[in-house]
Image (cartoon, rainbow, N blue to C red):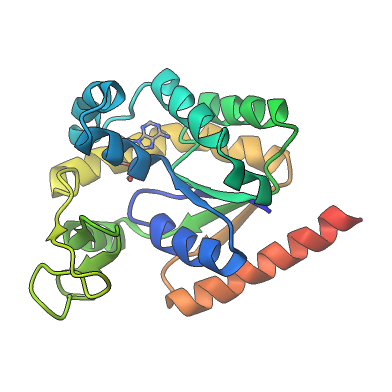
Length: 221
Ligand code: AMP
């Protein structure tokens, strides 16, 4: 199953996508994670992307397109994938259709995670990320057992430089401006399903699995 996750920054796309990818045993591809890896390794792409990311702006489409083509060249995507953080505008959605059709693939299901702005700001301004395994914690909602240390792997936790209130608001404004065309694109293709991200992650997982099953059944017909 090839799944795309939509939703504003802080809707929990990364967390839910990781859980669902593990459950379905398919790779989780996050363009934000791929970009942060490039920034930390100081690659050419990372150097070009860094300033846009720190300002909460989108990295130019062409840079992300190249990065994605490289990722889709890996054999693990043959079993399916969950794409998180891409597409973020109509141009990227059309690019994705093009990349996939060249690989004789198509998007099967698009999950649109919905949540309110106040929940997002509370979530992101307290988010802590493990520098080693990428696992997320929260200063008050889900604090680690040991201060700034990952419960899962012992790695050091950090706050993302774009998780400041000012930058979060900028990222939300960018999402609002760019997402309408994107949502219509997938609505027109009958692939879009909205889910509330404000429920317990176990409940969200159950609903996502029901969607996957329903979609699988309709693809068989
Ligand atoms: P995320 O981890 O998805 O919140 O992404 C963090 C930042 O990476 C975003 O604020 C953008 O600057 C950049 N980014 C991630 N995915 C994309 C994309 N599909 N297009 C452009 N920029 C992106």
